[in-house]
Length: 118
Image: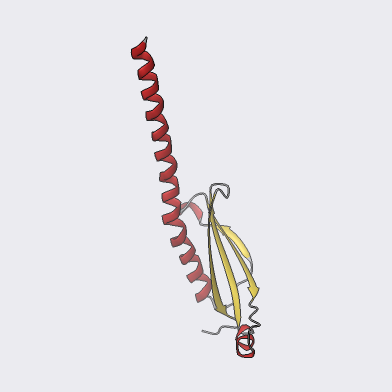
């Protein structure tokens, strides 16, 4: 009876640590993959000749479960006259990459010039 009790305690501890390892593996996968996907999508928007607008989507079959959402807004820099003139030429882009029903979220922001011509 004592041996069975010790075995039950040992197995419970073992399964708990195994479950935690699997959970941490998912977190590590997201923390590695999301920044790369965000940089890839940001590069796609920054090389496009058109000004980006708010949009969303997924990364297809190559990265199942990963979604992206982009929001754009005009830059507001009112600290000085020089910066306020610069703000008229910039657009703030906020890109959010999520995975697993928004359980994991990574966000990156970048300033892009308005009215770009390549």
